[in-house]
Amino acid sequence: MRYLTAGESHGPQLTLIIEGVPSHLEFDQKLINLQLARRQKGYGRGRRMQIEQDQIQVMSGVRFGKTTGAPIALIIENKDWTHWKKIMTAEPDPEQVDARRISRPRPGHADLNGALKYDLRDMRDVLERSSARETAARVAVGGVARLILLACGIDIMGHVLQIGGVKASRSLDLGLKEMQDRSEASPVRCLDEQATTQMMAEIDRAKKEGDSLGGIVEVIVDGVPVGLGSHVQWDRKLDAKIAQAMVSINAFKGVEFGIGFEAASRPGSEVHDEILWSQEKGFFRATNRLGGFEGGMSTGEPIVVRGVMKPIPTLYKPLNSVDIDSKEPFAASIERSDSCAVPAASVVAENVVAWEVAQALLEKFPADTIEELVDQVHRYRERVRMF
Ligand SMILES: Cc1cc2nc3c(=O)[nH]c(=O)nc-3n(C[C@H](O)[C@H](O)[C@H](O)COP(=O)(O)O)c2cc1C
Ligand SMILES: C=C(O[C@@H]1CC(C(=O)O)=C[C@@H](OP(=O)(O)O)[C@H]1O)C(=O)O
Image (cartoon, rainbow, N blue to C red; front, side):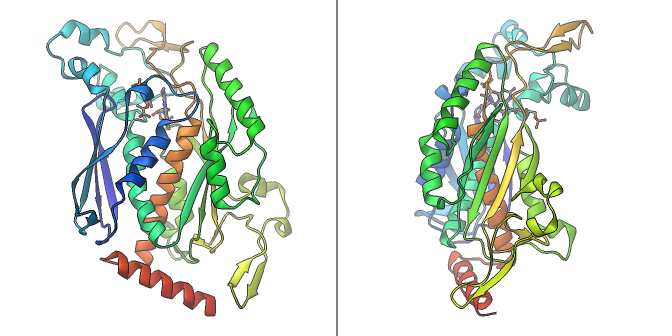
């Protein structure tokens, strides 16, 4: 499978094309729209999320509620377009256009690099595409991937582990369903109620001070069969693909699996996961400290991946910058902005990981129809259980 997205943040719509989805897949638009709605929520978001009501419109690849195997084209409208039409099309009021021209790059955003690289003297042309508005399209793509995963008995959840200085206590003994319910109930998508309150207070404080906050999100994928990805070539390692997908989310700066960076300070005996066997389960692990991967392949234990998001670059108390016209030092531009988007980013993370796992599944079990895929996965699970 492969996909491309297109669209500016304040343009008319986001457009995405996905190729390689097997036929006969029940195209549950409600589930995809639910993912989009989840991404829009989260304490700390700016006013834009009150304007948008993200929903997919299916343009091709689906008939009578099922995929046909043809490329799937989806669009998501930008409701904000009506307010930006003049500015984006330079008609009919050029003066207003100039007022929204950006000549003072924001430290931490793509403004200056993009302007220098593409020779764009209005940095709005960079902002429009570098904006995390694009993550709505990626969540829709992940929503389609989730439909494939669910058909194969694979489920996924995401939650927030840290915002600014507030860390949630981990409760890994909860089942996936309970974790899903708890994170949905928290305005910051955190499983720990006490930390939720503290995180919200921390966001309020940052907002009041014209500042922004980052944090850490975690994604868990349950029901993954052993052996997705491969050790035989560097670019076939699934953990590496997931790492790329995570760091490709706007503002994500790092990724770890299982105990992650803590592995550096532990002896091997406290890192590696002992191997057990039972008639009922076949091979399994006593622990899951390595987060579901060995040799770039899934172990059959849940995939546990975390990503760190830096604080939002646009600050109402802006940092120093230089005007690209006058070359004078200035405070950076202020655009309407989120003060913390870590909860929303945890939904984006779930969905980009869903895509990578679904793609790995279809690489191992090539299939033109969803029945072929489900059948192969079922038979494979049986084979490895009997190994
Ligand atoms: C869900 C989400 C919402 C975001 N909202 C904003 C925002 O309102 N203002 C802003 O300056 N950056 C925001 N960002 C971060 C920028 O998009 C990001 O920092 C920028 O594209 C530069 O890319 P980089 O940080 O990966 O280098 C958001 C990121 C995500 C994932
Ligand atoms: C539009 C979204 O997020 C945007 C991401 C973003 C950025 O710079 O990344 C800046 C803000 O854009 P605006 O100035 O239009 O409010 C966010 O609202 C979205 O998540 O759908």
